[in-house]
Image: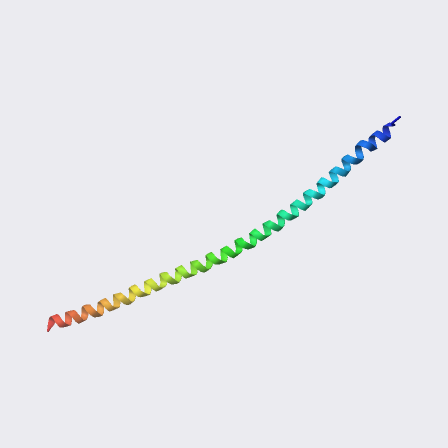
Length: 89
């Protein structure tokens, strides 16, 4: 005959064991997700660095465009002055 104490042990021990195993599996999965998340964060920071470099290149192109416009404006003024000088002769 099975006593109440034996019945409690037969039911309780496997439940506690299964709960402990599920807890360990969840902890393992959580640590794996954390590792993957940190790798994604590292990749994201690398992309941000690339975006920063591209923004710097865009700014340099804008600066060069402004410089060329200023230089072309100066050349145009010199040519206009030369043309006016030739027309006045």
